[in-house]
Image 1 (tube, rainbow, N blue to C red):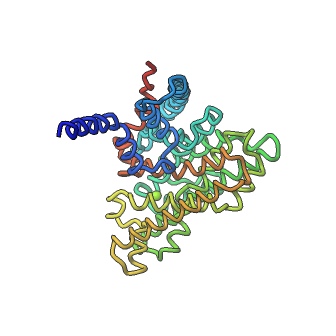
Image 2: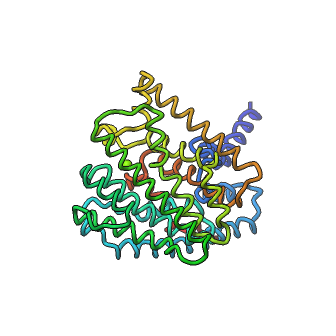
Image 3: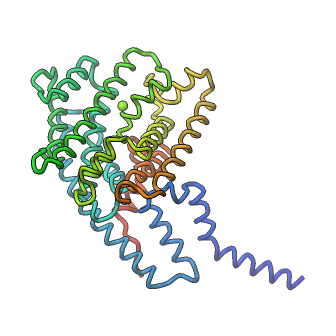
Length: 379
Ligand SMILES: [Mg+2]
């Protein structure tokens, strides 16, 4: 009996010592390692590793130093984009503007955290901010006629016919972003890359107009017709070229030509990003009657909401299989570029894990704090 009690005691002692293991397993169950953002997962792993009895002190020290030094760099970049956002002062002319610069930068830093990608992160944050503003304008602010005028103005490159002042402010914000991408001068290859990116931007805006027209029509579209447009409005064909533009030494004409072929990896990430976004769509969007993947699927196939969600989840899992497959074989472009596309999908997993993390600011607060505010204690 005494021996049994002793055994019980040592078992509970062992369990106490393994609390970090239980946490590690729980974390992996709620967010599988390969679907989480590398930077978020790295921090979690450092804490786990520290609790391991057999940990290597030197390795642990360097891991913390590395994490904290990269965090300092990210902080400086966050300062740069925050100043840019403040100086733009768009709230003056656009009362519906959302202040989400930290969330936007979190997403950009999630796509590529490496120091070499500093310019990519800055461009991507600006792209996300301005695009979210355009999206909100098309979703809930402009009239259909105003939106049509805005889309035409962007196509023509001329804002003279814009019917409202707020549209002129928005137009200028988009044009200023285009200028940030580069003026298209320099070598011929560079101007091709810049123009390619601007064209993807205009394509996204056209897809927003289609969605606005559907909304005003008040009819749900067949699932495939909806998805054809929604894959463009997912922005996942625009964000990769923005990232690529920030790393000129890795991404040149060859890499942009590769994007132009709409590779399976990019297509799968678009699919995944769009479906996940729609499954966690804001309730108000659903109530207002916006077309979303779930309700288009329900209507076309005459199934319940639960069944539609189950089918969409299966499609998401299949998209992940495609992304895994495409990033394991020898790739046509450098691996850091492939990783940035996979990270776009991972970023969606994190931002939409529980809610719409971009719209509901508080749901990303912990991530933002850990990524940019609190260093890992080094002693
Ligand atoms: Mg929209």
